[in-house]
Amino acid sequence: MDCTQDRHLLEAYIDGELGFEHSLEVEAHLASCPRCALQAQSWKELRPTMRGSELYYRAPAPLAENIRKLIPRTRRVPWLQRWVWAGAGAAFATAAWIAVLTLTHPAVPSFDQEIVASHVRSLMANHLLDVVSSDQHTVKPWFDGKVDFAPPVRDFSEEGYPLVGGRLDYLERRNVAVLIYHRALHVINVYVWPAKDNSNRSVDLQTIQGYNVLSWKKNGFEFRAVSDLNATELRGFAHLLARDQ
Figure 1 (cartoon, rainbow, N blue to C red):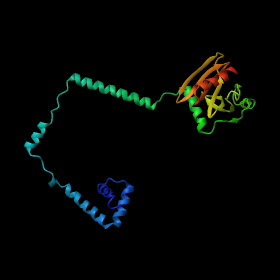
Figure 2 (figure 1 turned 180 degrees about the horizontal axis):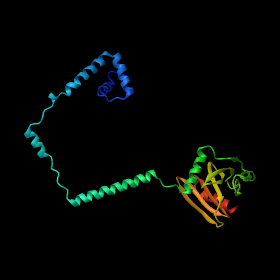
Figure 3 (figure 1 turned 135 degrees about the vertical axis):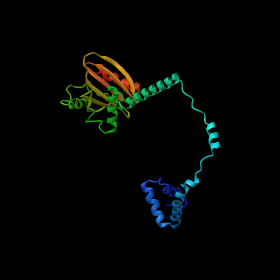
């Protein structure tokens, strides 16, 4: 502690405003600095004097009366105004309660939001691939016994979308197959699982948290392709995958 730079610490110590650590620091300094110790002692002796009743005086009656005249009197609030204020208070309380419910019970994320979260986790947790191969005849058999369906696996290296492998994921209380493709430095996660019916649905695009998500259904399978790749190239990839299924 420096006598000149940390004088405010000594003042705060006398007033009992320091935490335990800083109090120990000041006490150690006082033990080694007679000047500061004398100053602290003089301040301690001065405090009771400053609190003495002889330093306080009651204002004369005329002065107190003049001060009261300067203070505006509180008018009675009409019953209608009181009712308006009560209604406003109730509305505010209701709005606050709704806000609390919203914050403590956030909306359940949608299925596509869960897929985006899975995509992000795969990139951050170094668990992008369970089987590493660009050979569709290696990746597809890897899923045997791990899922109860045979996902359609294709390699599109010639078109600029090479297959790099696959992994197992868990969504909507079931195992799903994930096929991983590359486009330059971009990763494309393709989630595949059996659809509830054999109807087809064309490719649909949405953006969630900055990621492009394409969804479609074909030949009894649901597909989701997720990537930070631009929408045009990602849509071109989805059409390749849907065409060759």
